[in-house]
Length: 428
Figure 1 (cartoon, rainbow, N blue to C red):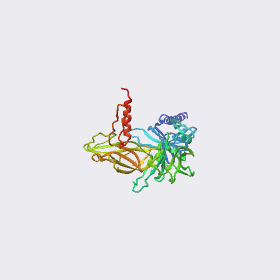
Figure 2 (cartoon, one colour):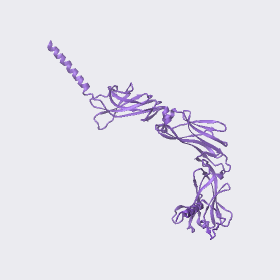
Figure 3 (cartoon, helix red, strand yellow):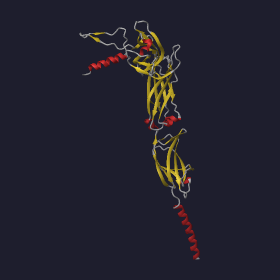
Figure 4 (cartoon, helix red, strand yellow):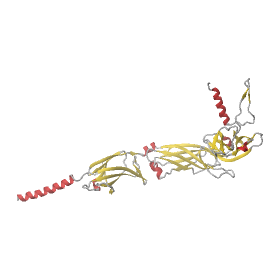
């Protein structure tokens, strides 16, 4: 009998040892190749970065390499976050060419926590790796968000007959009532995190007419690419075109709080031609031999064969003013005869300098011409003399001979006068 008991005990001990050794020594923990965190909001997936508390869910994706002796089972994996254990939702094999071990991808879905946490990937209760899960509240997102350069854009089109039907969209803060067709507001949003948090901030632009107090509220719409980026330029159109002379206000709001504003004025067309300022003027010279084009501020006494034309750099005298104006270029003669119109064109005038070149004329046709004259609405804006600057003649008593009365003064003459005065003031 004792003999049979010894045999039975040996058999049970052998089975127990075999089971224990197979479960302890042969089941090695998988190796973590990568661990990625992403989150979703309104169907858009955001990779990494702080997770908004208003996110729909948080996804954790881990690539694990198993040894041939270790079975890959979804029930062995879990995510520990705080006191909560979240099991794996899926475990799928991944191609791993050239490797003897098997690679599996485990996916977890978590609820977005209220504060930043540290999540821990576990296999059979054993910790494999840890990762930080930063969390950003909606208020923190709004505080980090920046609104850069809220700007007003106006589409202008001429109202005169036989004018160019093209439209010009320019940034300005003042424009004529009859030329405006559409009004836009544009600004840039910049954030250290994706702009997808704007979906919970109710961003709007409010257009208000100050005289009547009427308001028009326009919600902001961003594309999927803009929501996933960290900066975006957003433009909205004013639903009501201002039709009378008045002052308006544009205000950008987030969560019913102002973030930026801009004021503009709608003016009349009266005396706008007097707002055109000549910044500088120079010549555009085209050589017949080399066919090269160059700019010259002063011309030599003898002009070689070629073509010559003026270039006027214009801007508005008032900051932020933009409008369309018709300008004419005339050629004035030495004998005082009636000036001849060379060009007439409607151009855009803004507070930034803008060059205007009407064209060129053959040098042989400019023998009796002393200057190019720029006009608008019968008002002379400036001259560009073709003749060189006359020399000042001073006698022994200190008196000087004045320049000819028909000499048109120009900004080029001012520059040369300043240059000569500076040379006189320099020490020898």
